Image 1 (spheres, one colour):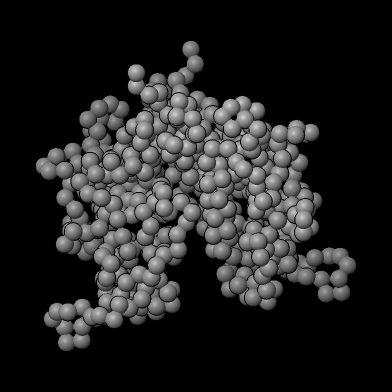
Image 2: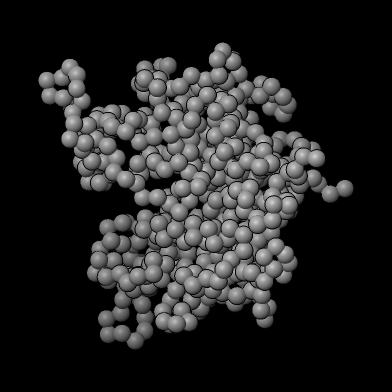
Length: 234
Length: 234
């Protein structure tokens, strides 16, 4: 009997920023779902599931993201298709090829958004302090982190974590949380100003300070040929 | 009756450099295969086909590339998974999700490598002068071209088109062919020298010139977490 054809699934690595439990500083967090079935019963895994017959790939990613975080992404991009024949630990299991997306979810009032109410099998985890993950999901998360941190250096990805208008200090805090290290404020200001990616709005942050900080917004992004159909442009 | 599950295929956009039929200058070329079955019988399409049951995704891409060009790629990277439900023109057809790779094939003695001997249904086409393509393959090629040309600006991708050792003029010719425009030699030299991506070998090109040009090689590349398993590093 020939082996059954590989099955398609869509999974998503979802990033948001929330204060670290240990340091209190903003840090990258990822929602994970505890598996209630074998294989890997009891292990944490990325949210995801099968592709519906008439569903676009990115719609499937959005659906699983909505089911997990009850929110819409501010950025969604296809990451990679993972399909090594050995990725399930069970040789008798049907082979699954996972098309993986990565998504950014903006903070709501300075906090990562709430997950499904009261379900102990869905939790946010610090991206740099994850439990053991099912299947090859650790490899997938490591690759998503690498893409996010690499992309941060040359793109406007931070935009998806914060609002349309921000101070340079707020933008630097996002970069620091994603990169996991402190950045020199003066160097950061020079780097951002040289990149042309951010422009002053002409307004300042109203509030308590004697010298209120200037507000900035992103200049219009360059778009890829797939931006319109498959990706939410940053 | 429920719709049948989507079927997986692997296709590859293969780039090589060869002299343009019209200008004689080096230009990007892509091998295409003429379809001998409906749908799109007689149309040109990307080489590809189903994934074997126990075959890794990149191995399937390499196999289809070998079948088409009889050569191994100098660069192979996953491009994108295309899976819109509407991508076949026939609503009754089984839905196909294509995981697409892009590959670079080095010149052999200054020419794009030979394709399968004497088969009129497999031909090289100028990437900027393609015939109508089957399915959504035109969208796929446009995206691959965009990725190649974008990546060219900040990476060592040209390496895959030429040998390990090259002159700056040879490197500039590759950049010009990929980008489809002339580059100022002095600016190009400054840009390359500033990038730290290329280092002098200490040798010069032996031959006819009074002042033989220096030879260069690429410095070791940064690797992504997936380089070892899934990609051929540049």
